[in-house]
Structures are given as C-alpha cells and as structure tokens.
Length: 266
Image (cartoon, rainbow, N blue to C red; front, top):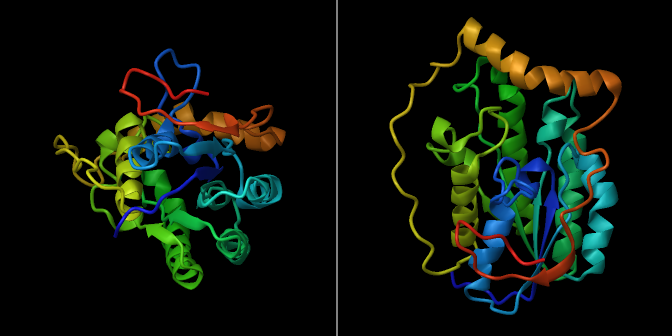
C-alpha cells in the first residue's frame, strides 16, 4: 500500500486513544498511539494537522454522541475510531448496540470522504484471570469489528490477531492499558496499515511469564485491590474517570516529529 496524502487526522475514542498509560516527560499529558501515529504521518505529510477528541472512560454511545459531530465538522480526511472496551467491562453489554454505533460512525466518515482506521482488542485472559469474565465478549466484539470494517471499507488494525499483543511487557500494571512500548507498537502497526513507508520493524520482546502465570488467586486478588477496586467504586458512585476531563487536542494543530523525550506541539 502506498501512503496517501492527508491534511487532517482526527482521533476519536476512550482512554486507549487518549494515550493512557503513555505519559509525556513530566507526566502532565499523555502521548499514546494516536499522537505517535500522527508523528509517523508527519514524515510523509509535513503540513498535516492533528486533533484528538478521545476521553478516558467513554463508552461507545458517549463517543457517538459527543465526538462524532465535532469531528465531522472539521472535515478530516483521516479518522481513527476505536471504542467499546468500556462497554465490554460493564455487568451487561448490548453488543448489537456497540456494533451499530461503531458502524454508524464509520459510515458517516466514509461518506464524508475520509479514510477510517479502526482496531480489534486483544484478549488478556491469559495475563490476568479476571479477564476471562469478558473473554467471550471480546471475541464476539472483534468479529463484529472485522465484519464492520469489511462493509465500510475502513482500514482495520487487527491487534487481536497479533500473537505478541498480550505480551506482558507491552502493558501497564493495570492490565487495561498499553504502556509506552505498547502504544509505540500500536502506532507502528497503524502506520504500516496506512502505507507509511520506512516504519521501523518492532524490536524483539524480552521473555515473559507463560500464559496463565498471573492467573492465580493471590495475583488476581492483588490486581483487583489495586486496579479494579477504584473502577468499581466509580461505578457504584455513578462517576467516570473521564468526568471533568476535556479532549487533550480539540483544536487541530501542526505535528512535529518528536524524539522519545519531547512532546508534540500544541
């Protein structure tokens, strides 16, 4: 695939696209795969602008209701739409609704003339035992995302099909978000899917514990206390980690190629 020329890239989504857990130096802002993808795109599109509406904790309906129209108004020619994980983590989920909202967004952007990028989700049930609760949902979700991308013509980054996607060294301690290296690899995969040339191949990963190594009662209990307890507390209170959080990059701005030690402009 030859890289297309883009003038404006807009990212929609939740915490993954916001960039948690991939902080810039100093920790005041998150970088994440979308920022990193924008940097890749800037190598072949020096004048490209970039906006990011993603906010942590957002479910697919919230992304549809609050991010779709502002993004369409910008008339982007490249859009990434990644969401649904916060729906999958709820006690019950309507997968048909999730798929419908995802497809509606993709169709809206495709009809506007934009290229759409989307992704599947890795199944972390071999890394943390409690992930088995939603494993079947993730499998069904991923198949729906593949079918939707085929219908809409979206560019699909099939993360779930990557055997290294669940490697422990690519995930933060909460096992819900990629770490800096994980976001870097997602961005590289997305750039290659869009035909960006000269994207460095992923480096080798250090050996890690075999599947099921963390699927022990003590390991699950420690993880649940440190990471699931705050999430459950927010659910009981009817709050979200995204409450009061504004999009980090709601106004399109130029992108500069950055080193690992410097942030994007804007």
